[in-house]
Length: 187
Ligand SMILES: [Zn+2]
Ligand SMILES: [Zn+2]
Image (cartoon, rainbow, N blue to C red; front, top):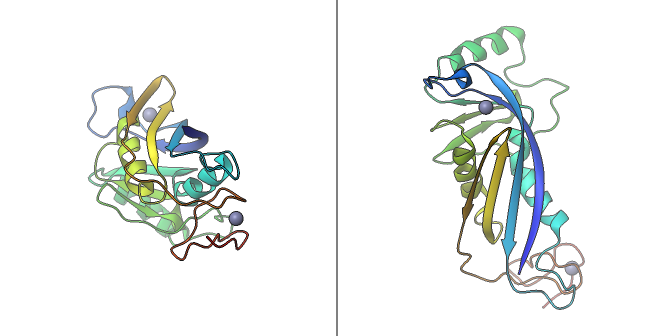
């Protein structure tokens, strides 16, 4: 069975080198759907609490929200960093509070202090799915990711290969000692 959650991400990007209107900087509200697959945990009668999937995903993905996403070779990148630098907001601002932990994967690097994500490939809906899977695959039993942004959408299925031990009282993943980090239940 699957538990499914959805989150919104508002971002700006462009397709550098693309011969179409998307080569100009523009913005979207992207809708990300994450499907998590496992057995049903009998105590709570859930695969996984959807709000917990959302919380786990958001912790990392909030770095994409109200962020600028640029490819590493895009000349806008140094130009924008220069402006941020001159404005004194390159290394943070008091109003920039929605920061997740900085991350660096093969596909993307987040600079939460200036709400920037630098990607290796063009950030299409397909590219975003690759980035998200890479960031969350060790945290969630992902069976499918769908990302839509305006009229563009893409989806990818995955084969979850394990089952996660969950708390029969709250449904969230037990830690490596078999203890629930939320209620203290011990297996
Ligand atoms: Zn776009
Ligand atoms: Zn618990």
